[in-house]
Image: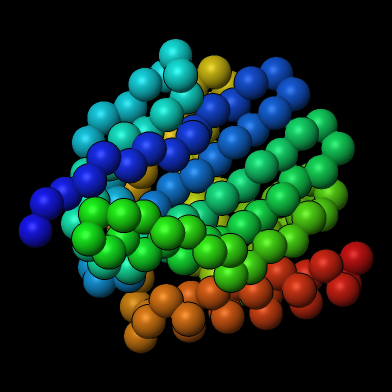
Length: 150
């Protein structure tokens, strides 16, 4: 079984933030990249065939889009499918981070957002979920309820 090279974007510039991290559904933790490139704003991984979640945040000065993608790697070929996406005002990030009832996996992802002109630092935390669907549904239900409250 050969590992493939896979890169995600992780950068925080003056008016934009792109924050993508991979999550292992087998180990139930965010994957630490094998290397990072601050200049290009990239994190690099070596991945085996399997199922992963890709947590994504794309923000500009007005709003932020949160996405969760299912990444399937089969025979060394990655295939991405978006399973959750929502666009909201930036204030939702502060609300989530200050809410004690927010899913820990979501607040940890947001806390790993890259610093200005930096890349993400991945924390090594194991989460207790049965499967990837439980993660997605938990985050989806929480965020949709949060957006309705606004």
